[in-house]
Length: 253
Image (tube, rainbow, N blue to C red; front, side):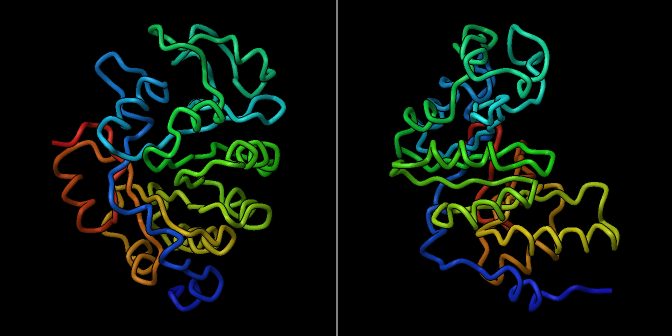
């Protein structure tokens, strides 16, 4: 069984090229330019990317009330001095939590956007593993209100992109994709179904999956492809062939 790109084009039309043009032209630092004593998703990591003129990829998690905080993990343990699930805490409590290694507090998305201030493009990955995406999506939309810089949201969860299409159609939206463990027929069907639900403006693709017929066909019809996470020279070469920009974890020469 094969699902053709014409069906993708019908159910998930490509965006106007001008809408997504800003996605091309610079690489993206994965969770900011971190490493060597700089913590991921921290103000210092974002400053490092800005100084290079590179875009920023960051993650947001929801507090108990849906408030968007820039943080990757569902658990606090790896990156902070506290323990437990970030989603079980009130926003006011999260405001008091220290990041490790003296990197300050966990920033709210609004604070990160104020820091970036349009100096470079920013990709905001919305972390949501269930169907209750509304509160976090609403918080992200509110943080983006009045922001004049280049920004896009993206998520593995196609319901996130669908929410923005319905409630904030002006925001550029992406679908994050990995084919890991799903290179069979069921996986291919699921990818197309996710595409049709999300109706994204671009794809953020796992570099380990290239070459990918799914990524190539959608790129050919006008969806930009950024690829994560590029960590080696070999992966950089693969990204240059199969994607428009890399999301990387090592400074580029």
